[in-house]
Length: 301
Image 1 (cartoon, rainbow, N blue to C red):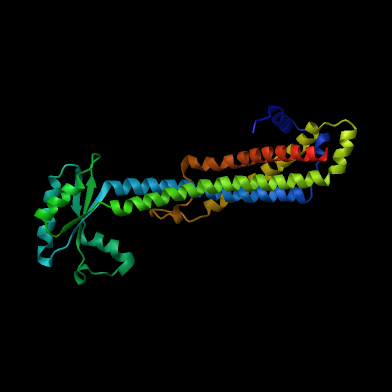
Image 2: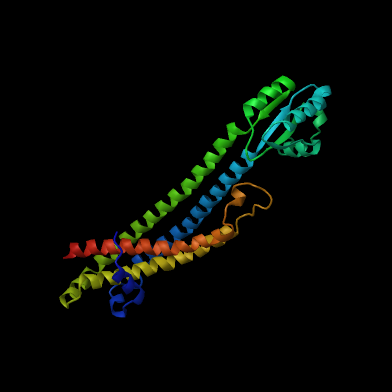
């Protein structure tokens, strides 16, 4: 839709006489305020969802792309020897920045969420884990597997490829879902404002007819409705945005954890992003009301 700068100027400047054409209270006013506020509240959460999903996808992609794991599955008496052999192979493998065997305490911490904090590794046939950190160039996973199978029979390489990609893809799709939700919210705002504007125009059909008789143009009448409904949408969306940001602030903090639900929110400069929600809502309301008023006035002609 082409932007009418004269209409925008009239919206900002205002006209006391024209504002009297549109009732300041009533069903349409309440509907516009509530719809804009509710949609702005939901938009803040959609933004938080999309931005958090984006951070999650980047973190999972970066962290899992740089690390691999080698499991040493061998009889108890051979675990240490095969672990040393695997570390020796890794020390001469191009693309491996560092490698170390996890301690018993670290492995117990990894298994604690499933088996409890009092887990004793001696009582379970738990494989020894070796953490492998890749260099920027990466390493040849297939070649490393062949070397390990020949020199360390009990070693198995897991480069996380088989489950890293689905996780990153899921987070990316969740981010896309957040943007789709924003588009649907904007569409819902446009629909609700259009319905409210049509209702107000229909309710004031006799007033519009009288204004036409005394020389008022359709442009003058349309500007009155556009201004009133745009300001209502702006006020409602500001209230909804503030409440949404307060709700996001009250969400649990992620702290040192990397969980998604506890990390749902804004970080750093992203806190400025919700400030655009009222502006976009007002813009949607302006275009929707301008379209609805033009169509309605043509129908009343």
